[in-house]
Image 1 (cartoon, rainbow, N blue to C red):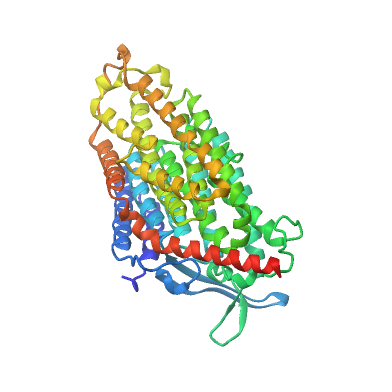
Image 2 (spheres, helix red, strand yellow):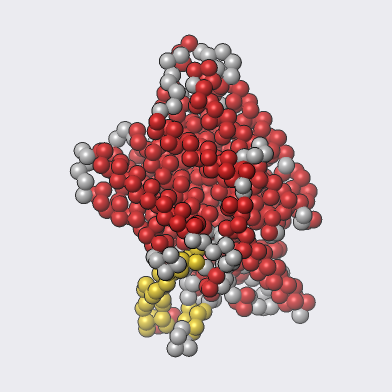
Amino acid sequence: MQNFPILSLITFLPLIGMIAIMFIPKEQVKPIKILTLVITAVQVILAGLIVAFYNYSAGGINNPESFQFVEKFRWIEISGLSWIGKVKVDYFLGIDGLSAPMVLLTAIVTFVATLSSWNIPKSIKGYFALFLLLDTGMMGVFVALDFFLFYIFWELMLLPMYFLIGIWGGPRREYAAIKFFLYTLFGSIFILIVMIGLYFSSTETLVDGTKVFTFNMLSMMNKANFTPTGILSPFNPNNLRFIAYIALFVGFAIKIPMFPFHTWLPDAHVEAPTAISVILAGVLLKMGTYGILRVSYPIFPEITHQLAWYIALFGMINIIYGALCAMAQRDFKKLIAYSSVSHMGFVMLGMASLTTAGISGAILQMFNHGTITSMLFIIVGVIYDRAHTREIDAFGGLANQMPVYTGFVTLAFFAAIGLPGLSGFISEAFVFLGAFGVEAIRVITVISTSGILLGAGYMLWTFQRIYLGQLKDKWTELKDLSFREYAMLVPLSLIIIFLGVYPSAMLNIMNASVNTMVKFMADAQTLYSAMVRF
């Protein structure tokens, strides 16, 4: 399997499906839906094979030999460009313990989102074509190791998401789509500028011994790229590496979304169709934290150490601010959207610890939040399809009318709260274990634990208002779950329970890579300290 181009297949299979859909008459709605479902199901199988054949002992980060399922060849090469010389771009794919969980998450969430898209009312052909294009863009981000290729996939998902919200969304869909587009494009400009700067500061030795500039992210992670010149104070505005780090971090932070760049998310979630909300919360938000771990941390390790306290601070703000905003919502979907802002703060806090426990907890939280919040948005979609309202106060006593549905709601709500035995608990526990062990951010960590209490507050209050009490007369005709809705909720429920009982199934995948990253960051900090003393 290591020599089979499985990463190309899992990435571009949806693109092939999109092309196939373009040749199907728009009246043939059922074949279009079935084709999309088959493609996303095959993706899940391929992701399962990747995990099954994954070598748990190999760590990644900056060693090409440690990445798995690698595919690399020269994609673009232009010579004789005045002072630039030769420009080369590689088609370079590979995964390690950071990206393997995200590949699996993307496949699972996309499959569930396909089922959730079954009732899309208009322009079925266009919807599923854009849906599959979005799938390719998301998957490509998690497997690309060439920065140029990474950026192409990063931008590729922007266009279909804009139209999926803007055409198939709610009453204010145009506003939400434009806001999403502008925020994301703003961040992408920063990423592009830094990418070009890193290209001209990173070299790679070819087979013939010549050195050329490179977009290879692993070459950019060479500690030799930072020198004592201008590095004595990371806060010195003349330090281009510091400026590049901030610009790159902002580009990724918008996608998380980190306060104060979060305002696009509630609008996008509220107006987007249920399936697109599932993808937004389940996968797209993780691209921001993944980008920081994959690009910002190992390329700028010395600056990461200097700014870790601030990352933890913004994580704490996300946790508490997002929870307070969620508590104030009357719209069920907007409440879940703000809960995502809060829970992504836990990821940032774990990342800021720069410890094995903290970063492992952060990556596990990315995966667990992806499955839990996907389930929560499906739960909102189920009730909206029947009642055509998301107003929390409009309901009451639904557990009497829809008991099976309420059972799934209970599981999802308590997983989001962090009940022991469910997946949300173990990831948050690792985040706090890692962060509390770092003295510099201990106070921030203690304050951040209040997010657990606030989360329980708004979740339980919402559960009480919607599902408990007296059933209102107008909801006595509501039907319980359909077979399609079972097919969406059961797999996510099983994953939540399984990883709550046996988290090692995921932790073992990421362990070697996280240990390698922590050591790499520590060695870089030691080298940085020696430079400062010198």
